[in-house]
Amino acid sequence: MPEVIIKNGFVFDPLNGINGEKMDISIKNGKIVEKVTHKAKVIDATGLTVMPGGVDIHTHIAGGEVNTGRMVRPEDHVKDTVTKTAMTRSGTGYSIPSTFVTGYRYSQMGYTTVMNPSMAPLEAKHTHEELNDIPLLDKATYPLIGDWWFVLEYLKKGDLKECARHVAWMMEITKGYAIKIVNPGGLESWGFGHNVHSIDDVVPNFCITPREIMVGLAKVNEMLNLPHSIHLHTNNLGLPGNYSTTLETMKALETVPYHGKPVAHITHLQFSSFGGDSWGNFKSAAEEVANYINTHNHMTFDMGQIIFTDTTTMTADGPFEYTLYQLSGHKWVNSDVETETSGGIIPFHYKKNNAVNATQWSIGLELALLIKDPWKMMMTTDHPNAGPFSFYPRILAWLTSKDARMATLKNCHKKAQKNSLLPSIDREITLYELAIMTRAAQAKALGLKNKGHLGVGADADVAIFNINPETTDIARKYKTARKAFKNAAYTIKDGQIVVKDGEVVGKADGRTMWLNVETTEPCRIDDEMKNKFRQYWTVDYENYPVSDHYVKVKDPITIKASV
Image (cartoon, rainbow, N blue to C red; front, side, top):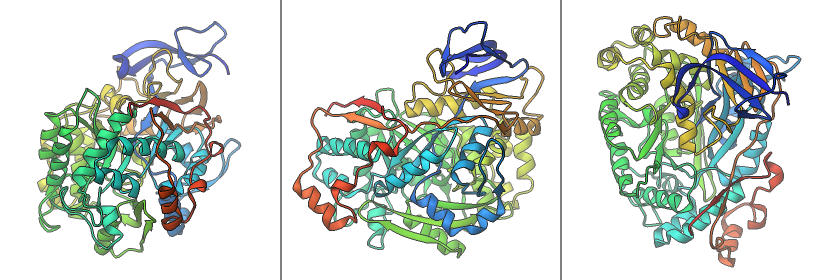
């Protein structure tokens, strides 16, 4: 692996406090180093912006729901076909690209690390096979644990220690990275044709509430010392007036001890910040939600920014997908995954001339601009739910340029224009803040110590963009910036140049990251647990775990727990 030196670029590295300084970045053996020899390959970054490789904390790129979405939507394949080149394979997919196309498109935008946020443990083996097939990126995945029967039983008993040991076992046997909770209590209720509508509703058969599930698993997460907080999809997601549930959720999580590390991450916050009490008087509640976030520090968030396009919604929140089916009448898939989770897939088209869709578009940007601290709010589309990740450059333009936002808003439904807060918001995100929202904050929230920065010892994941911050006003020349972010001048993965001028020119397998959580006592695997597997699962306990050969990294991230 050759040594590389990136010379004379404008470096934006927020985790190290570097804000547009002209400097050199040295790379050796796939890591950032202090210096290299005179034989190093030189990349002249004069007049260019240099950032760490992009990190995406929440993007549905692999697993059962993604693969089902591909099968349900043959028209998505036809809409967007990719031909092979001397360096790349062919592929398909507009909103749900095939595995290789997923890797290429992320890399072309300067991304190097992405996290798959939803994995049914029963489908973990297939999920990892797909992750392994995605090139050019490091990856991890979050097992769905919030409505898993054993977890609910431990929480019902109040046995947090044994619950923690069980979650640690789950991370190892699914090769997972973080605790994912979707509509806590709602997924188990959906198996009986019901849902929960507040955080204090009782889940059928378990006599436990969503509040107890969230708070209990947040405490378990702390006991296990996991690098990322609980990753939370709130109750009542996607329903008018749900902002009150979101506020109640955030207040409930204040009861979890906070030691400077977030106790929870609420994902795709746009979908949880709706005002009004019906679709007729639907409105933004971004200001109310942002006001709370600005005065509290115990949580982080990501946007879930709407894109006006055809896409495919997919989530473990079966009740929400049923609601969306009733609203749209589109073809759909709804499913249960035995005792673990639920799921749904529905095609959807977000339209500017639809008052609700246009208001949703405004809500995501309002949140990102009203939340003062960029370390709290990260850029995502909840790919592909609010739109394909390939539209990230457009979101970057909206964030950095009021002109860009207003150019889109003026073409939106008149009601959405009237109610939008965007005309009153002058804030324009800087390149330094962008580097936080798309890299540094996401790596920090995930506990990825070697990602999201360019300090000595970091992974040599670097993105270089054709933007000169001294001569280019990205707020006024937002189309130029959008083009630059769509096609990175260079993407470097583990010290190898994999993209040049927006074209894939190199190969890198990428790794799958997962946790090996060492507890003081092992999870109790007894005959009762094995019998439940025989009764309720389609596989025996012995066939359930994901063996090491399913993942590309044999040395997982080892965490020492206190239970």
